[in-house]
Amino acid sequence: STPFTIAIDGPAAAGKGTISKAVAAHFGFAHLDTGLLYRAVGAKLLLGMEPIEAAQRLTAEDLQTYGLRSPEVAQAASKVAVIAEVRAALLDFQRSFARRAGGAVLDGRDIGTVICPEAEAKLFVTASAEVRADRRFAELSAQGAAISRAQVLADVKERDARDRNRAEAPLLPADDAVEIDTSDMSIEAAIAAAIAAIEARR
Ligand code: C5P
Image (cartoon, rainbow, N blue to C red; front, side):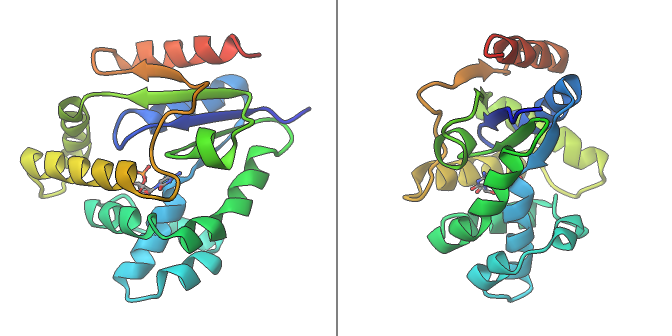
């Protein structure tokens, strides 16, 4: 079947991951969490490696590395993500994934603006910083992480500011993206809204 790209962007912990997985399952598309690419490079930075080289040599196994979901790695990811050469090294992989036969969902920060400006459907998923911190705190606490809600809120805000204010591929909605604010939505309602917005483009 012909390629069909769904781009899902938004700030940290807005619900992109959950929505992307559900949308991919609904349409029978492949899913790529592009944040994992930056997290894998961030994890290498924490090990003392040079980030540009790490991005150029990234392998599929690097994406399976234990601990990529930790708050420390998230911060390191947003630091390497400001480097133009790091972003350039990850571009081709994302673009070919997006155009694979059978359809693809990519979630991240710059999918609709830089990676796939021609995507057939674009969503920009947001929620207030307070709501996003609550959700991420619940997630991390359930995993047994020793972190306070205040620390999670500070982390989320710091990462958002870095992602929004960088020169290269800043976090911002594409002109033709459908915005979904999930602050007051259940996850089921958010998924239904996402699917409805995509159906309208099919
Ligand atoms: O989505 P996630 O929170 O896993 O992303 C981690 C970090 O990677 C983000 O804070 C952002 O700095 C960076 N990122 C990016 N572009 C993407 C996906 C993630 O710059 N497409």
